[in-house]
Amino acid sequence: MKKMMLINPHKPGRHGEESITVIVQMPLNLAYIKALTPGDWEFDVIDENIELAIDDNGELTFAPVDLVCITSVTYQSPRAYKIATACKRKGMTVIMGGIHASVMPEEASKYVDTVFIGEAEEVWPRVIKDFEAGKLKKVYDGGLPPLNLMKRVFPDREFLRKKYNYKFSSIVTTKGCPNYCDFCSVPTFQGRKFRERPYEDVLEELAATDYKGLMLAEDNFYGHGKRSNERARNLFKGMVERNLQKDWLGFTALNISQDKETLDYMAKSGCFGMLMGIESTNETVLEKMNKQVNLKLGTESYYDCIQKIHDAGLVTWGSVVFGADGDGKDSFKRMTDFILENNIDILTFGINCPFPKTQLYKRLDSEKRIFRKNYPDDWEYYDTAHVVHRLVDMTLEDFIEGMQYVYDHIYAGDNLRKRFRNSIKTTNNPRNSMFAFRVGSDWQQVFDQVLENLRLLYDSGDYYKDYYKSNSVSVSKKPLVESITT
Ligand code: SF4
Image: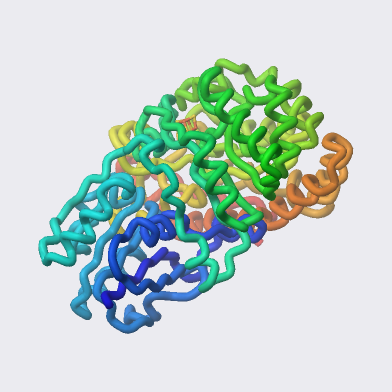
């Protein structure tokens, strides 16, 4: 029987959002690959968040197999290439897929036998047949198939659980986004058509898995119009009617706050609350980002929206961007005040990051502001936990001081406990408030790592090196305030 190894790469020592223990998830795409593979195969999996595929000398930790399939997002790609190189040295065939290989296929093809672009659902069985016939091609493009084609094809979660006992999994209910925010890779990778999975099929999958903890995998489960909203409502109503309560959460936009019926079904079906992309409180910045969905709503309406979500007993998880053009030194205090005044239960963030092939990358690159360009090694910095481009509206020192301000006022000392008590008051739901508190506690460690990344960048001098050369100015680095350097 042929053997396939599925690998989720992860650089040892890295702490990012994958370290949030309450939602540590299995790599669902690998569970799909297992489910979609036809014929008689033996499988194994290595999730490098848990165990390594190569040791410190770059040698493999597993015995040779017939086929190695590696997934990767951008920050994982240098590690993915190292693993692929080690596999190739041992004569194994390597296929790479995932977001990074899909947007940078020419780069990935230097390290692997085959690059898989796009989504696997329709084309993967053909890849396996070609491999078995010794006719594997260099590139396959799975495209972006409609989700109703995937009827009753469920990822094999049990296979992954057996090896690593993941507490949380995820489930796909939609893909794609018609918006085009400049920093976001979703329109590039998943397309601008909002693809919806029939809710009856999602209900079947929910019934078929005994996973209680689930995250909806997409960026907007509620959707962009009346018909999509109704579909989401039917999904949560179906969960209640079929007694499919889960401990779940998902990402959507604040317009859901106007739909009390859906919020009530969400609460009854076990939802903790929702993540939403606030990004910035500054409308000029939102305009620059092309974050139309927030501009339409208007930041002044957030308080009312959040109150309605709290009234349903759900917590709100705001995701924001720091370091966007237009955000100056004052943006950190403004955002901190905004989070506290609006009773947002969880704050997580990303540092503005020009992911490859996004509008943001094109613009910053044309402005010669990206200083981490030693690809593919430098892709490891493209994780929203590092600064990779030069800021225009503040210095690096301002940025670090600002980030420290947010940390001190939202995370440090007694702040998390204060916010926990506030969540109980506003939601009247201790279970969901405890969930928010635990995410906050985990994120505090991610935040520690981000501050460390920033200090290392400052100390390295890389941020200023070419800048001063190219701008013919001689300015020494400003000393950081003591609280940051110590
Ligand atoms: S940030 Fe959200 S709304 Fe904007 S393009 Fe990405 S998925 Fe769509």
